[in-house]
Image (cartoon, rainbow, N blue to C red; front, side, top):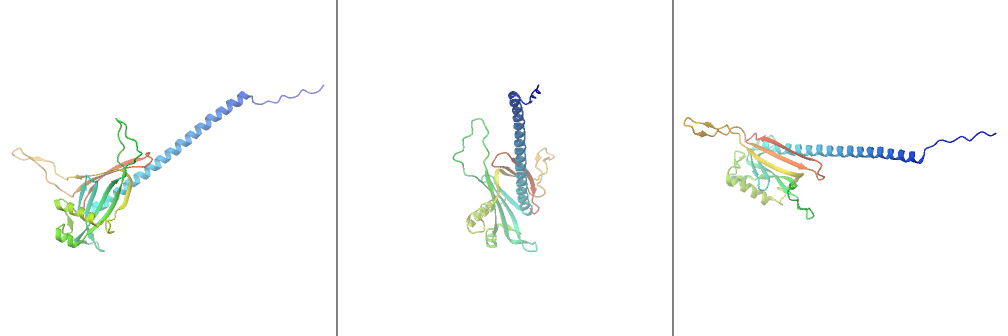
Length: 245
C-alpha cells in the first residue's frame, strides 16, 4: 500500500486579500508620513530663507541710516531718503557734497486673471519689490540751493525734500540714479519717525509743558515679506538711531 500524498500548506484567497490590504494601509501611512516630512522641511527651509532675507535687508537699511545725518519718509509713495556726507579715502566727510540714498517700494503689476476677494475676507496685501539707488549731489547745486550745511542735509526744511526728489527724477537715465533691485516678495514696507522726547511736565501755574527733544534722530523701520508659494511669511521691526544727526 502506497504512502498517502502530503497536503501542501498555503494561503487561501481571503488571507491573501487581507495581507495585501494590510500592506496597502502600511504603505499609504509611510507615503503620507514622508510627504508630510518633506512639506515640513520645505516650509521650514522657506521660512529660514525668508527670515534671512528680511534681516539682511534691515541690516542694509540700518547701516545707511546709522551713517546718515537725516532722513525723510514719503509715506504716500513708500520712499525712504537718507542723507549722508561723501567720504574720501581717509574717511573724512566732505563739506560741500552729499550722498542721498533712496529705497523705493514698487508694487507688482496687477494680475488680470486674479479673482476678487470674497466679501468678508481679508484681501491679500500688495506684493512688490524694493529698489535701491544713490545720488551724489554736486557742490554747485548744494551751494546754490543751500541744501547742505557743514556736510549735512536737513530734510525738515520744506524746500529740501522736493529739491532732492527732483534731482533723482532728473538723474534717471544718466547712470547715476539707476535703481537696482534690493529685495523681492515684499508685502509691507513702512517707516515711522520716533521722537526722543522727555515726558511732559507741569509748570508752577498748572500748565502742561512739553518735554524737550533729546538725543539722536530715530526711525522705526518695518519690513514684511511673503514668498510666492505662500507657505512662508515673516516681518520684523527695528528702531535705528542716526549717529551723525
